[in-house]
Length: 161
Image (cartoon, rainbow, N blue to C red; front, side, top):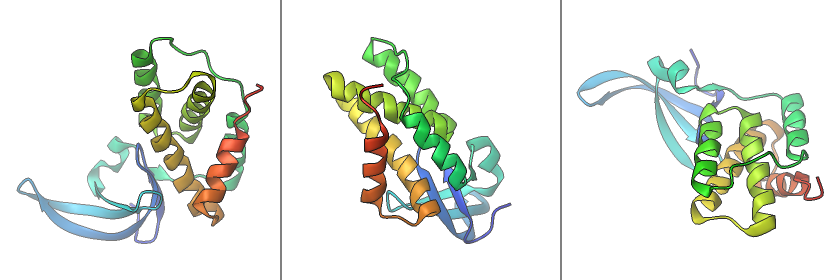
């Protein structure tokens, strides 16, 4: 069980801090919820305490993991589906895992694809969401400015790879 002040990651939204644990009545059922503030989006999320494993909530990673993730951004573009709709679904499945390396692959692939030929509106939104996911975790670990981290992410993606 997490406690107030713990830094955790909620898949699809990113990293944040547990601000409180409260009993809430939702759909005529009262149970405890973590009140989580997502740092990159200024969003507050209610996370049912009894569903954290099912949802995929996890602790934030450590700096060595962030360093490895940055190396992932430097790798060449993955082999991707040509059809944007299938490609979108494949990337969405990666994002749902909440795994920082899978999210980094989505960011890398979409940045490189955007540099090559541009992205659909849906893929642009997905790129922003995936980037924010990574930024939120890095902000909590490194105590750096969001813009600084965005620049690091963008510059790490090597268009020559």
